[in-house]
Length: 346
Image 1 (tube, rainbow, N blue to C red):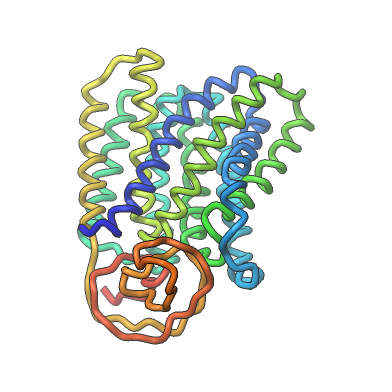
Image 2 (cartoon, one colour):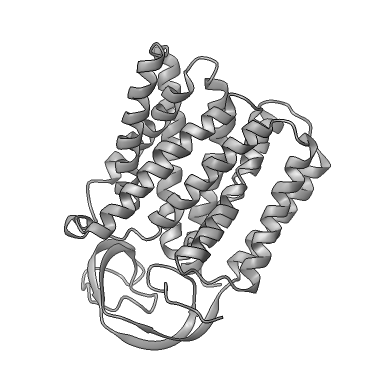
């Protein structure tokens, strides 16, 4: 695969590692911070992390369009408010390792929603990748049996909320990933902190700072990297790569927490790696037609779809601004990114 297409997979893998590490860290913070306050602080930390990168790019005019406002509002409510509240509720009732492993359900929720409602194509390799990733999660979770059913249900609901969030953020093209994360972090974080403070005393200052730091890395930088990858890969492919997040959580458990390395964990790691490899090589090719389109997103000029001129920029330089695509019919290998959300009869 060419270098330009490998980069989005790298962004999603980095996002997964950061988020995976944040789960056991958030579990530790629950000893000193109320769950609702923690959910809010994590997202306020996310907003603080991306603020310096949110001052340039995007299109305010496009963001004011009802369609994009609806996408953004849905992503904030589902992924920023509901998702973290459900996650910290699960963390308060189960071990962090179990919760980390159950988070693989997010890949399933994202793929099903993308296929049912957002016109994403799922070829044979993508389906096999889904099976491999889900099998890895099942192998990891098997030692726990039916214990923690309530926590598992809460994680499942959180994953459904994030699955909706993933599909909606993959469609937002009027703002940059950092700007999307900033809005989500400020609105959702402020709402959850306000609700938490109404229900419990303020957390100790050092614990609050620690929560902000975990949110900055595990949610802020992670979400921005994920959105950037999802806009180029499509929600299903980006989320299946992101499904490697539990492995980062396991690494923390093996090292910092001195938990034993289990054969089931090694088998699950292999299955998830196979799924990601299948996903990275998954593409399809057919003749398709592009309607005229005006949008704003991060892009480069050596990808075959952005041929407008910038005399002062190299074709490989990535940048963001509003631009227009003329109608064209052509044939080439592609994935369901912002330019390829057409229907498939098969």
